[in-house]
Length: 278
Image (cartoon, rainbow, N blue to C red):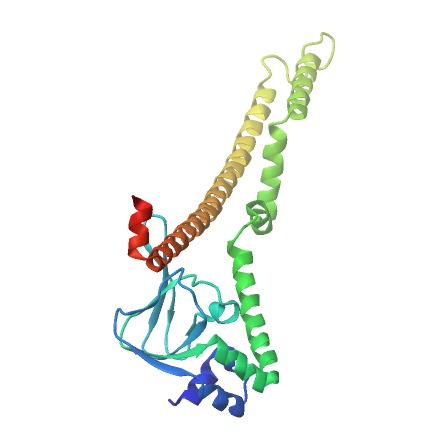
């Protein structure tokens, strides 16, 4: 596969025509990496994009415990490092080649010069980036901050909603007052002399009715409790995801601070560091 065909497979450049791809091909820099060789580290300044020609590259970060989290595996025809290409910011992940890999590097200045020569290509690039942002927003909408109550409500059946309503009402004061009045009226009617007693003492029919009520109420309460347990489990998973994301962001901040400290110390002459330390 030649470079022009490779660019046709890259999502960021798939809308460019043949002339634009040929012009872009001339500014690409070809680099070869060996297996386990690092392309860049998280926190490093970035001003270029990488296109995988052959081989594969692993993008990863480390959490606060030092464990590696693999974000993506880029194979031939895929790109990485595109965020730094547009904003010139620091790298948000580390890239390591898993095997002998050939990469094509597009510098930020070369991209700007390319867009000056082909202004129409900027709209194609913006269209592709907009599609990527839409897909990313969809992922974040599903994973970032979930409304557990809404998810449970949308997935609930009619029977489960009825069980929740009955279980909620059975634990309320109005339900207690209603039962007290009902029992008092039942017992009072069957205890008044001279009145027809449909359930005389010891109120066997009332006992059966109360037992049936207790059985059905216990079933509805157990169904509602099981749903609450499932809701608590989902809420715990969501809290874990939020805490994990917060830990990762804090870890990224520490790594960036450490990287900036190393860069600063490397630029300070050795004699000046010794004087400051003393």
